Amino acid sequence: MKLALNTSFAVKRWMKPEKLAAMIKDDFRIDCVQFSWDYIDPWWPEEYRTPMAAKFRRAFEEKGIRIGSTFGGNASYAFAHLLAPLKEQRESAFLFLKRAVDLTVELGSDIIGTPVGALDYEDARDPEKREERYREMLDYMRRLADYGKEKGIREIHVEPTPLFTEIPYDPEGSLRLMKDLEGTAIPVRLLIDWGHALYRPLLKEKADIRLWFRTCAPYIGSIHLQQTDGEWDRHWDFTREGIVTPELMRDATHEAGLDDVPQYLEVVTIYEDDDDAVYERMKKTMDYLHSELD
Image (cartoon, rainbow, N blue to C red; front, side, top):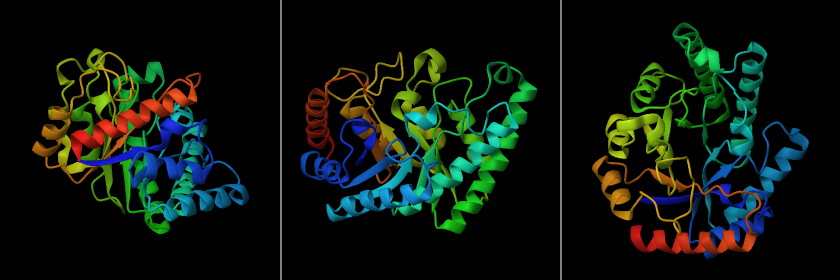
């Protein structure tokens, strides 16, 4: 497995580029990260955003850390983006994602990842309206790929989420999306999250990581790793007991031919959690994962 790290664990805790880079490389022994937009909002004015991106890029490069991709974090996920009910929302989302492309390039990365958005309750349950929103989202993604190629982006990674109101949310829908987006200016791939793929209340018998990998393997560009119990989208670290074991991680990844695909540990904590306790759990988690997976 190719173990990497999403910076979500550090949001609102370790915000200085040099400190964050040192922690990731020296304490956690990681040299590839997925940079969360929670650190730098793509909407921020370029005169402020660009120098901030340069500081993070320089700090990571000096520690020998590669920003393998950027990813829309908690703040971005709150918005309905390309599946929103209002045209003004969708057009704003498209502009936001173009600015996220710009940010990604400024950070020295060439892959951008994000969920595509959320449907309104009624639209999600209306087959005709759901298909209409889906088709329009495909057009936005093709246009985003055009823009990404122009700016130097290599791939776009779409994350399936564990909600019926979002697209895609299951293996078949993910495969359909990939086939519908074949031939874009740059490849659109999937970012599969272990906790999303194992979410039983929605997926029932399809909450099977091997099924996801078997169905979607040719289109998987990156993976989110987390510990979970399959009952909620937990994003636990690995000091908690759950259903994601080292044996399952190794075997399912190898069987699907995904050993070279980066698996970004994505730990999301409540903001009230003690900073030092979060650090200690992350240190124990990274030591455990290295011992089991390296």
